[in-house]
Image 1 (tube, rainbow, N blue to C red):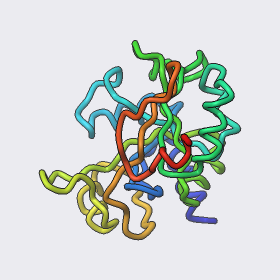
Image 2 (spheres, one colour):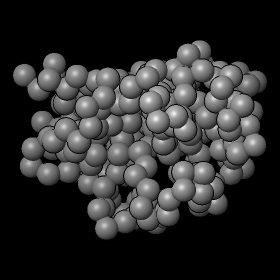
Image 3 (spheres, rainbow, N blue to C red):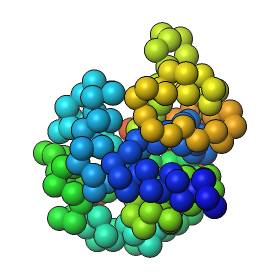
Image 4 (cartoon, helix red, strand yellow):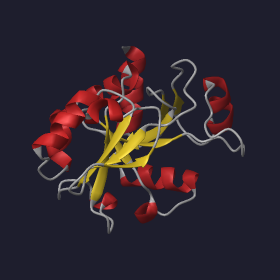
Length: 196
């Protein structure tokens, strides 16, 4: 628990943390810390308004804090899939930090099946943003070894959490902001199992 407090204190003070999920390792910060979000954008080499962030949540109880009303079929789908390797794109409401309000007016919601990621959010008291930790290799998309992640990012982030070997495949992204769910990215999660 002492180490978890250290992680949460770091996030509250505007720090950047790399942590395990049920797919690939994620790079994140407190969604309410503008400077920390901008630091992540610099690391990723993109402008804040062009960045596609998702929020890591502990469960579905917070989705109404950041999204407009979710219809019953979408909520049932999310409830069946989460926690799990899925990211759901939903219409954002006015409560999301101004930093994330781009032309799309949407937000990605992720509840990973990983106790470390969910415990961070629970202890922090609000979601963290997440973006995948990519490899610079043309063949391998993601860095899976926490030691290699540390070597690559030790001067860019404040904490790297060793959660064992990460995965090679990202989450499946489902856009639920329209009338029908649309798969934007095929990842490790198989949504067909839940759409029947």
